[in-house]
Image 1: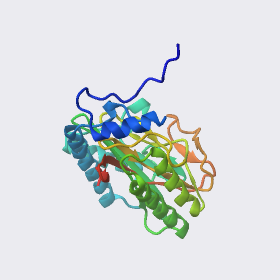
Image 2 (image 1 turned 60 degrees about the vertical axis):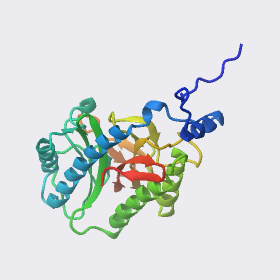
Image 3 (image 1 turned 180 degrees about the vertical axis):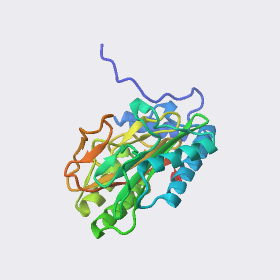
Image 4 (image 1 turned 90 degrees about the horizontal axis):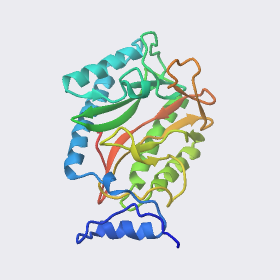
Length: 286
């Protein structure tokens, strides 16, 4: 006896909606579709939105204070204080052994840079500050690039194009499009400028957990990956390297977290938490 592939999408008996019909159409075409638990309720989306507002406050506060000569540990202290003031929890702290509340990744550090007392920001550095918050059980995740003082034209362009890649990814993310559409558009724009798009790390579902389905690669082909439908919450967070897309883990990092660009050339990343609506994505971490 032949058995068909188990369905991921389950309709509520007697309540077949237009979204159900769209999802079942694509599932019957062999496409990967979400499970029902990935569709957030309006109440859950509102909770994630509130978390996103505090996450934005954290990064806004860092933006006001960041300067040459400060340590990355001082950035961590700022993030912790904003959390305490708003009854929030930094999701990174203690996550799989990560020792700090925020990731501070300077120049060739692609992501997961660990704040340190003796690591000082210098004129010309570019630094990614990546923060994830938990508020009342809801998660929001975002990162920004900061240019310390005056830097080189090469670094300025990298930071700008990385932000453009995020904006392009958000623009192509439409209801009933696919994750691969996002990655294809981002990779095309990055390659136009000669940058490598990191493949080892991706965007991801978020909201009720730190990391949920789907993975959101920033490279790929149109029409591949999971179908995106209203109510899904996820991040887009392209990481661009000057040079190769490949990365490695710093052997000198005792925690095994810091990811370095393969050529040890500068890297840049921007990130937002997004909810898919009937008209496209809404940013929850403005």
